[in-house]
Structure formats: structure tokens, C-alpha cells
Image (cartoon, rainbow, N blue to C red; front, top):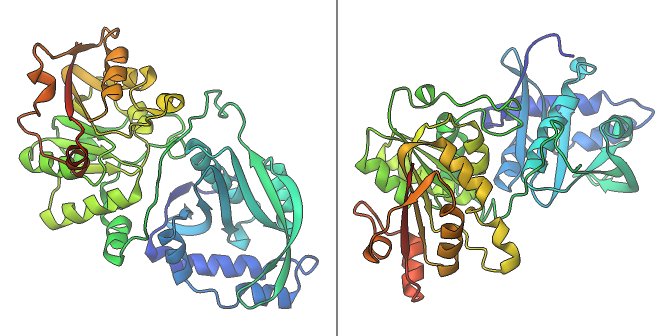
Length: 398
């Protein structure tokens, strides 16, 4: 165990010099029995602090372990169906404090929660025992060429996801893209700065394993009606509603990082202060929202998953709508917009038997005409260009 409180946070560019020091010190401390001084020197050669920024820009995630406000270790991983842990380093003087195990567990939880079924990594020879003790199986030996052109002996290792989480609950799969084109420098600055300031803390199981409910008063700094938009895309609707309703606190969830970056740019330029953004899975947020804490929930042009075998991937499955109903206050509103008739069918098939929801529809105009405060999004514009008909469904929490 650590002898001081250990916390974890996302990487920011201000960490890079300290991370480089940890990185190079950890390599320099490797025993000669595994890597001699020439190996260690080649391993560290040409390494710069800017490489951590570049890794994040290319889609990697860096989690930093902190003691007394000072970084003492870090782990880097790349999400995907087959996740990859690419770096794990701890200050040499903190070896034995289980910081490496804690960092690896943070990365594993994040990757498995995001749908990875296996995690791979390339282990140095001295680290094989450490990873084996964490459940990784050894594969083929490798010769890895450093930036300086020096060959180092390593070994490939993998860990497969178990059927259940450590707490006995089933893992979730995540479907859909998280990253697109490389972010522009200004967008990356928004993600590293402004997003960190407005992002709710304690959403994922890695950050909040006990699923302690969010304090919405603390999140917004005031008592306010709270709305949620699930999958806000590039944020046109959320931006519109935030401007129309400055006294409302709006939480937006969007796992596609490029969409989040686009919204953050708009938010910065407009000076909006009543929006909070979770750049991840809305199901994680719904788990930690207090019961009856939301006044409105929006699900607008969600991914249609058109193939029959993929319909379970749609958001409108019973377990998700039960979670929405739990978070909505009595009389709260749940809006769904889609241009896919079969999505309408599934939404109604799931909601109609639920005693928690009442569909507000007395005439065709109630689902054909947009809401009075509606703004057309790029997804709706594309649907109309392609001759698909929008549907607007309104449900009230009973």
C-alpha cells in the first residue's frame, strides 16, 4: 500500500516534463541483468516531453498517479476492441508502493468498460513477473527497435476480459467511434483546458467504483433545473438550448471526441457557463445521477444501428430507458427525435409497456411537427436532404 493518499487524474500538457523525468528515471534504474547501460541509453535517446502531447493527439489516454499534488507515475493506453497499454512507469523510489498495480487497474477498468475484450502490451523482460501477477499471459518474444535504432528484447503479453467485473456485475460493451481526424491545436487546447474544468468527476467505474451519486449543486455551483442530452454530436441543439435557457444546467454526453471538441469551441466563443460535458458513455452518467434529478432528457438522432442483429446496440433498450426514468423527476420530459421509422417502432415498443412513461401524442402533428424550441441539427438536415422524414416523440415521466 502507499503511505500517502494516491489519486488519479487525466494528463494535461503541464505534466509532460515531470512525466519525462519519471519515464527516463524508471528506465535508468533497470537492472543490468536485463538491460545494460547501452540498452538503457538507447531506450531514452531522442525521447522528448512533446511525445506525450502527440500520443494524446493520436488517440491515446494518459492517466497520472499523484501523491501530495506531484505526479509519481503514469499509464498510457489506446482504446479499441483490443485495447493496448503502451506505457506504465513509476518513480523508482516509489517502487513497492503498489502504484504500478493501481495505475494498471485504472487502465484495465477503462478499457474493459469501453468494450475491449482483450488488453495487449509489450513488456520489458524485468516486468514479465509483474504483469503475470496481474493476470497477463506471456506470448512471443520480440525485438523492439528504439528511436535510436537499438534493438531491445521484449515480450508480448495479453489479458482477456472475464465475464464479470470484480464487483460481480456484468461488463458493458461500447459500440461506435471515439476518435476521428486529429484535433486542431486550438481544439486540443480546449480539450486539455476548458473541458477538464467543466467535466463532471466520478462518472466512470474507474473514477467512482462505489457509484457515489453526483452532487449537481456542486457541479453547477447553484440550484438549477437540470437537463441531459444523450449523444449531442457536435452540440448544435445543446448550444441552442443553453443560450435559450441560461437558468438551466445542461449536461451533455458524447463519446465521439471530435464532436466534443467542436462543441467546446462554440462554448468558448459564446461564453456559455451553464453546460457540463461528459466525453463518454451516457450509461455511466445515468448510474450516478441522483434519483428524480432531471427535468428533461434529450435523445436526438441517435445511431440507428439499422441491421436487425444490431438493434440491441440502440439506446432505446429497456435497461437504458429504466435508467432514464429513474433519473427523471415526476412530470419530467423525455424527447426522442429520429428519421428512422424502425427506431420509432422500437422506442414505442419499449416505452409503451413501461408505467413510468406516458406518450404525449393525440394527433399526427404531435410527432410530425418539431417542438417549438427546436433547432435543426446537421443530422436532421442530412435526413431531409436524403428524403427521410423526421419524427418527434415526447414522453412524460409519470
